[in-house]
Amino acid sequence: MPQSTSLGTHAAAQQERLSWHSFYGLYLESDFPLGATGLIDRPERVDVEVRLATDGLPEPDGPVIAWMPCPQHGFDVTVRRGSGGTWIWHRAVATFFIASHARSVLVSPDSGVEGAVLSTHFVDAVVPYLLNRHGYPVLHAGAVVLNGGAIAFVAPTGQGKSSLVAALLHRQAALLTDDALPLKLTHGSVFGIPGPRRIKVWPDSAEHVLSLHAETLSRVPGSVKCVIEGDGYFQQPQDAAPVSAIYVLQRLPARSVEEAVQLVDLSRREAFATLLEHSVVRAQLLPEEEGRHLPVYARLLSTIPVRLLRYASGYAYLNDVCAAIEAEARGI
Image 1: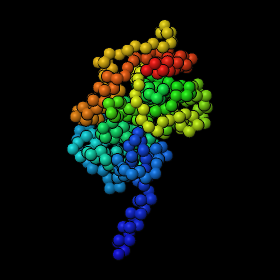
Image 2: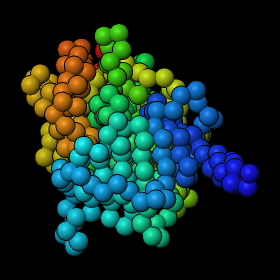
Image 3: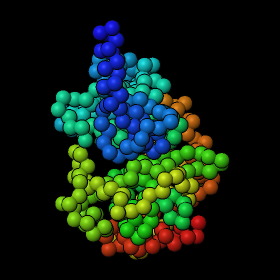
Image 4: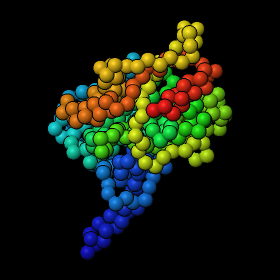
């Protein structure tokens, strides 16, 4: 009887620690805090269970398939995959073990890591991988909703995705997602799935684009970027929106362009290569997993335009860029 009571007490304590979150429509149950973002009441279904690895992690049984080099330490991130699952290691943060069926995650935090840093890395690095494994290809893109359609912007870091999204929000567009855009194919149409209700911007963008004082805003853990929560700043739809257009951003020095905004249609081949180039965690997927996403991309490219958007660098030109995008959205 004493043992039964102890087990019951342990189970009750574990239940009290549980929290539930929705990230991009994926329902997670966690026994450690993932922050307030996406926090929901207990859902009818749970797609992924997230647990602290109190008894350690399984030993990796596969090779390193992806990594992020670091000039000082050698590597900041490594990803291993084997028959047992996937091991994602982030220096000074944690190792995340995703089981082979992608429905459970064990987390082994590094000593001293802050909870906010741990949850940020989980959402930014592990959730996109889970989405891919659950059948949703993810683009490294920001997206807004204009005239009922999702307008997505893909580009390498530093080309102005967040600043452009923020400028469109300031002009009353609705935020779909800040940095990752999962796609789903429904009834022959490709929809973009809403992300967390927040946007991350550089401090000068917060001031010049949104007229907000950066020192009054929260910062992304481990980054200089500011976090702007949705309430009071912008709207966000609850439901997925049909993707209407994709723009590939190319920001150029103002002196090198004749016009503030230039739009160039990409060929189907160029557009397909662009989608693959900007697919999140592509290097971590097996060929057959990536192959399951190809029908989504094929349908997307058969129904919407993908355009190269060249624009002059500088906040003074952002209104011209936004106006061009809005005009196109009205004609789509």
